[in-house]
Amino acid sequence: MNLVRRGVRLETNCPHCGNEGETQVHLFFKCPYARVFWFGSPLQMDVVSVEGEDFLECWKWLCRKYGLEVEGVQFMRWVVCGLWRIWKCRDQMVFEKTMVEPNVALELLQGHWGELDVLTESIHGLQVVHVRLGVRGLGGHG
View 1 (cartoon, helix red, strand yellow):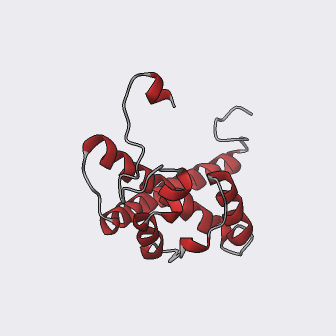
View 2 (tube, helix red, strand yellow):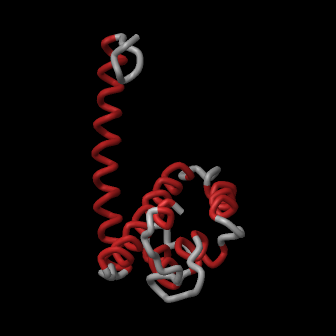
């Protein structure tokens, strides 16, 4: 880890539950904190069923299970935002010693999702304007 090379001492136990040997799979899917978070999310996902020995295997499992559904892209966007929110809460616990309860983390997730919706609409609006003007790409080089 880059932080270890810099001499930063980190606790290897999960900051939420104290489980020894915090791993990505534990942090994002197996920790009781993550389980409450995902079940309380708009996805209402029971992450006990997520399969994989490492994060990449879990990601592939999620993509196979949900990515091909009609709303798969939307579902996976929620997953990405949820992963990011869990990581931010973990960092807040590790570096600031402040616990963000799952219900608060979910409120922050909802806020982040709203910001993404506004951004997506803005980008879509730019694309429409560029198409109408006969310009290719968002950069206007074309």
